[in-house]
Length: 170
Image 1 (cartoon, rainbow, N blue to C red):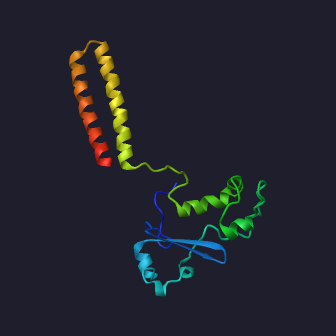
Image 2: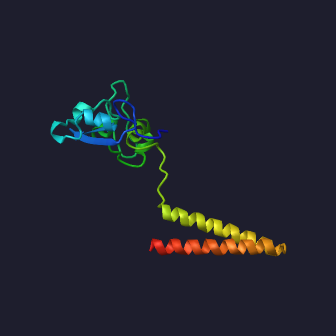
């Protein structure tokens, strides 16, 4: 799994990402800052994406057998021409073609989702609060009142912090 997108020219971390569709074919190029400057990407008048392309995951491979999705009838040539799948079953059929394209477009192949930092903090605080309340109940049941008092104070501090977090969020 790739950690970062790499420059198509020098394999440094890419910070400039270009996409061009020519004759219904998708061409993607990822460049580091220095290669982008050398190629004139920052100067739109001297820019030609075709000159930058060094690879594309959707370029035809003549030795490859043509595949057909049994569900929607999409063929390899259709997929290569449009860069789009026809149905959910296509991913299984064209998986070997899709994976390199996904690796070039995204960091890795697994969607991990995003959680806003405030929501993550709140979620962690709620879990910590519940753990402290469970510990408090155990301490009271065991008649460990000094420990229970410490836990009560920690719970109070955490509840105040969560309340402040919710106020700044609103």
